[in-house]
Picture 1: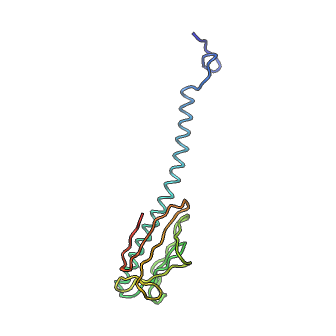
Picture 2 (picture 1 turned 45 degrees about the vertical axis):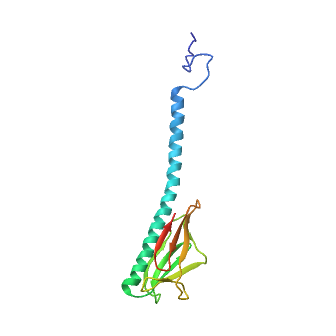
Picture 3 (picture 1 turned 90 degrees about the vertical axis):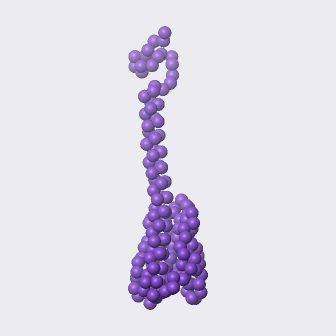
Length: 156
């Protein structure tokens, strides 16, 4: 029968970890991985929130054009978007994307109009669909499409 070493509580001549030491290490790893997972999932939540908010505001701009029977201009930039009436003097709303979220647009400021009939037109007055991506710092992205008929679709 092996003798116990009084200082460590282990059998003399044996090397290894006690059950308590293993449980402490496993607990520390669980806490660290939980913190990391929470940080990763919050970035995805911010992206989904920004996409929902953008879709909601696009729908609002289209409905305002129908309700007021006037043209509503929707301007989209990398940092956010806004909507104004056809004269450009009444701001309906303005929204900045959350930190770490941005839109990928073809030019510095993508602009299109919702007409009183709900149709989407470009600056030249031609019916046109628009596609853009909303992305976060981790390069996760969601594509959004506004058809020429004014239908707004989120494509995951």
